[in-house]
Length: 237
Image 1 (tube, rainbow, N blue to C red):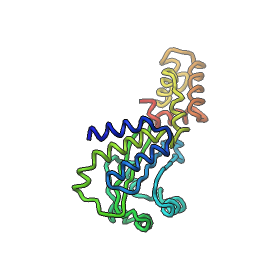
Image 2: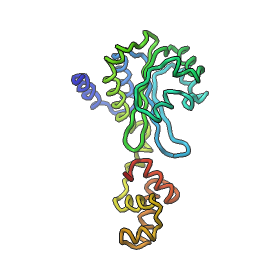
Image 3: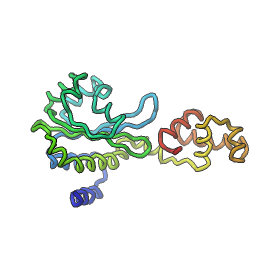
Image 4: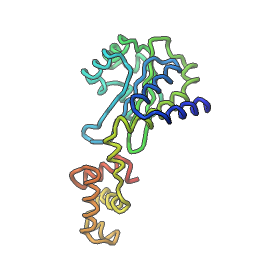
C-alpha cells in the first residue's frame, strides 16, 4: 500500500491539468478492476443553489440522460455523500426508490459500482464513483481494496478541486484578516456593530469598515450573507 501511494504521488507531481489528472485517476481505477470512473464535487455556496461539477468517463448516453433528467437530484449515492463519508456499494435496494437511475446505469454497462464520499477544506464535498460491467463486487474484494479506494478518492478530491471549482477556490483564498474574522464571529453571535465595537475596543465605524471589507472579499451583498458564507466555508471556527 505504501509503495503504491508513493508511486501515485510521484506521477501526480508532473500533471498540470484537470483532464490529465482525471485520466491518470481513471487509469489507477482500471488497475483496481474498474472500467468506469467519475468524480463529482459540490460547494457549500451559494446556499440557495450550491454548485456541483463532475468529470467522468461514463458513456455519452448515460451522461446525457443523467444531465437531462437531473438525476443528480435523486441519485442515492449523491444523497448519501451529503451526510456521510462511508463507502457504499451499488445495490438494488439502494436504488429501489429511483429505478430509472439504476436502469440508465445498467443499460450503459455500469452494473456494479462503489462510491466513496470525501470531505475537504471549506465545506467541499466530493464523491468518487467506480464501476464496471462485471463481475460483481464481493465483500472480500472490497475489504482488500478499500484502503486504496479511500486513498484514491481523497487524492481525486485534493487534486481535482482547483480545476473543477476554481472560482470557489479563489473566493476562499481571498483571505480575511483576523480582525475581519473577529467581527464576523461576533456578528454570528447576533451582536450589532456598536456592541462589537464595545467588546473589542474599537470604534463602530472601524467595525463597519472591517465588515464591508469582508463582504467585498466574499462577494456577498450584506453582513448577514457574509457571516453565513464565512461559516459555511469553515472560516469562523
